[in-house]
Length: 428
Ligand SMILES: C[S@@+](CC[C@H](N)C(=O)[O-])C[C@H]1O[C@@H](n2cnc3c(N)ncnc32)[C@H](O)[C@@H]1O
Image (cartoon, rainbow, N blue to C red):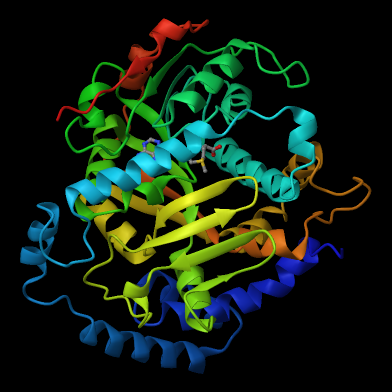
């Protein structure tokens, strides 16, 4: 199959910008700014002015209703908009996510190479590696939320971090992470021991009853918090989303960095609106919304609890939640986390593949076909899935005080026994 490659990324840049403008209309101010800047760069000042005046009009139409605060408080209590999940329903869905990931077994490297989305997995790894290389510094204290099977341990090791705390809701994944950390992963994998001490936890990162910042009080502050492909699991209701951001902010030192990847709501909603029914996808993925979203309209005043089912061959098959980026940015700001970067994966590839060191990294990850060219080897179906995601970077407000974070380093183990894994139990 013809590989879309870097050229495809270039070609799709214009498409991405235009699609964002349509999909984001009236919902994501971030993207309107982005489009304005792009239009200005190209010298299309008239277009930018038109966008600006549309933006202003939209801004006034979209002013939050007076009772927004009341709605928010109601939703935190599980009342209010019917789309906010009731406690029991929420618990069941969270358990469904945990069970799904727990049941996934650790593949051997042969099985991984045979995956129908192996090229997408390599691309995802490249994106996470770029983020880590850009933002991690030697000796950093790292909190990996939803660490899964520890797929990023090698990346953190290369960044020469000083301390690592990983937490995931899926006990089976944390056990795999432990083995990978200890270097007892399958013999074909790189099985070097990691050079930083670590602690592992099983638990719900976004739990309301056991706030993570209390659990990790003695490990904090962290220089970096990373949440890869999982932040959207906190968006099942407003209380959880706020809990997640509050914990991250409390655990980071001032000036600390929060890096992550998650689905791009703009793209998903645009695709939903283009689809005939409530389901769309291609040979490797499908997204399915419930009948309650049949009108395909999403109020900016209710950005939480918008559930869909996501199936990605050999990777995901569980409920997920839309994260409207403008709401994410605004809510994060309320907790002292300011936006540094947001890029759809297509734009991320386009921008960072201009840097020779990241082209080289892509080559090392085996994502450049036979390695003889600088073209990314990925099928159109996988490339479309990449378009469903974005990468973000937030920074905790305040004056950096790195000395404080460093002092905490020295906790944790270099060899983690099963009994060392801490289980966080939510009280009933
Ligand atoms: C797509 S995987 C990503 C794993 C890892 N971050 C990576 O990039 O390889 C999503 C992970 O989120 C975890 N997860 C989902 N909801 C969670 C929650 N509430 N608390 C902790 N982990 C959660 C799942 O168990 C799963 O390991």
